[in-house]
Amino acid sequence: MATTTAHEVVPGTVHLVDVGEQQASSKSRDGIELIPRPSDDPEDPLNWSDFRKRMSTLMVVVYTFGVGMPLTLQYSILADITRDTGIHTNALVEGTGYMFLLLGFGCLFWQPIAQTYGRRGVYLISTLACVPLMVWTSYSKSMGEWYAHRILLGFFAAPIESLPEVSIPDVWFAHERGAWMSLYVFSLFGSNFLAPLCAGWFNEAYGWVWTMNFGAIMAAVTFFILFFFMEETMYFRKTLEGLEDETPETVDTITQTVSRGEKSGVLDHSTSDGGSNRAAASFPPKRSYLQKLNPFSKFVGRPSNKQMFKAMWLPLPIMAQFPNVAWAGFIYGINLCWYNVLNATASPVLSSDPYNWTSGLVGCIYAGPIVGAAFGCIWAGWIADKFTLYLARRNNGIREPEQRLWTLGLSAILSCIGLIIWGVGADNAVHWAILAVGLGILTFSVVTGGCVALSYNVDCFKDISGDSTTSIIIIRNVMGFAMSYGITPWWTNMGLTKAFIMAGFLSLGCTATFLIMVWKGKDLRRKSAPRYWKYAAETRAFHHE
Image (cartoon, rainbow, N blue to C red; front, side, top):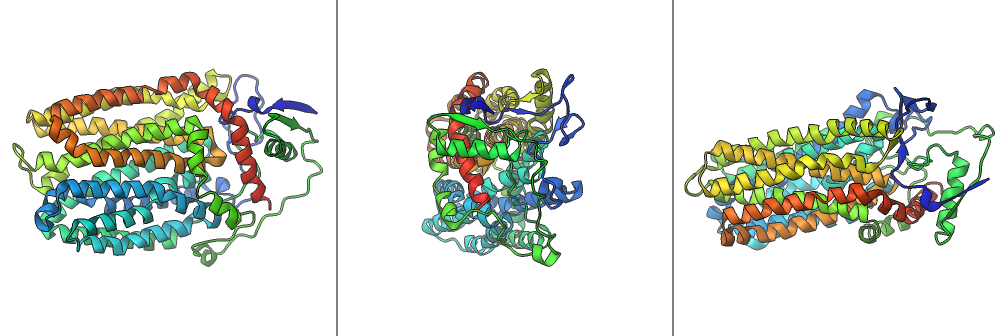
């Protein structure tokens, strides 16, 4: 029997790559350890065929576009809505800010339901609810109405902010999920940039009222696609990430000891014969296609309703108890701020002197951000995954979550450059192509920051990532709300040049804090270890009730 202090089992530090004479486990592929360890259940999402996994991820992308675009159709047509309804542009922007606030806090309600009764039903409800709310938007006549449907849209669309971050790790391994997470982030921001581009021209042809109805039609079509093709990915496994190399008996001992005696900080590692006497595992039968169409499922081992309601407030203390999570939320939040700056200034700046663009042309400026988002997806996803594997090999096969953070170095510099090009350029009436390039550079950094923050959170604390992701989204959207509320008076009172030079260097300084996390991130995870294993143990406990 060997004893190990809880502080020695650092969450997020995993043996990912077999190097030198290290012996590969039975759960490895091409010298890369499969983290989390897949079970022997053929219906375990980690065991699905590549086609089935890609189809599952495609449905997440379809949902993100199908809900993300209706939410953001208004950005390029704010001036037209103001002209026809009399609602001041500042009020329209503030209403969007309230929507972002509810997109964050709404996760407190929807995320626990998705982790108890399944992801599929929550996706379907979220999509269907957008249909009548977008129709209502087209009838807006007052500021109160605008605020009301923006708030309701924020609440019902909240799963778009946190549920894909759980669905993607459901089916992809640690060395793969960064690339697929970046695809989600690209879909999230890409839909938000594509929507104003389409809305601008749609508005010129049919008016802003039918533009909003178009959003309702899009959400309805998305609902039918998801209903017939989206599979449930929720699966309760018997291992914790970081403890996969332990036998199940050892994991039981570790988690039970932590949950009983966090103060002692001692984990009793009872050894076993490797499970030769373990009873053969039994798995539920494969479900038929009709059974898979059920919106919600009652899987064996799901949390109780009591645990579900507890999870509705758990993300709030997690913000204070896990500094790595709070920092990830801050990085995602500061990048959302610059995204909101872009959307709040594009239409007012380009529709007035000296540009005097129509709504269709204003929408076209979003072509730059779409290209920037695509490059950001590649940089923060595929390249970051490869770079992390490279650093893990140099670290004797050990993956540390902080290895991914080095990709923020480029985005810190480019976000500063992009903000200055946009603000100073627009103030000096430069050619529109320069503005489009500036917005593309800025969006590269926005997507990179969001993707790295989400992947870092999952890498650090995988087994509470459903709750910690909600914590991140709340931090992010509170910051986004504050920026939506203050951006219009900021740039109108200070002027574009001064405001955006200040924003550029603020972005550089905030993003550069990744250097502090590279230096101290593992120490913070080590100090959070007893609390993390306690939360993970409680989660695992109700999975086996």
